[in-house]
Image 1 (spheres, one colour):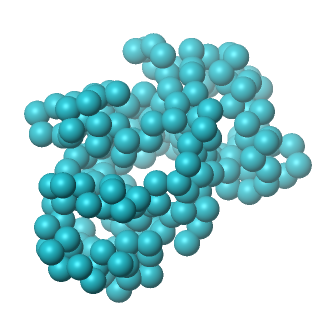
Image 2 (image 1 turned 90 degrees about the vertical axis):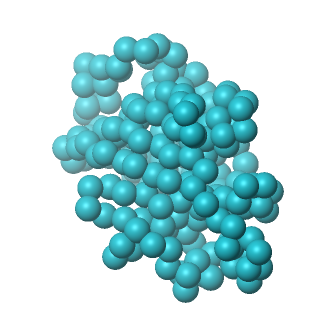
Length: 207
């Protein structure tokens, strides 16, 4: 288990951001920028038993890699999201029950009427540009620039955002970076996660 701390910034224009044109940002890179294609399926029961319990469950494909992730709902304020997270690599796109039993979802595994009713609820698919940045005080932040969409049945809504995930160091320095980006680009802080978008879409309340 780890405590995930990330700041989410929603892009307020349809056009792609030109991050490579920001010299002060490029100077903080500690490895080459790389791109990933991420396809994630989120699971719950028809009556949203996992959401009501305060956990999220997904399978994510990145290239040939499969990941199983459990996240607690946590808290979000002024764009800062903090939540407990359990992530495990899988050999195939099937849940590893033993690993799930080590997470916050464990109590639900024991309730067969809930676990047997688990089904796909929505998917996210997006391109991600990954920037690994070193800031002052040896703080390391992963900047993820995501463009794609959330899909639930025949509904979809766009994903166009930046996530700043603290990998090492101080969250206030990560916040300073977020403020600098917000001042330089068409961005606004967002408390809505991709899972939040998906649940809203699946319930007919696209946010």
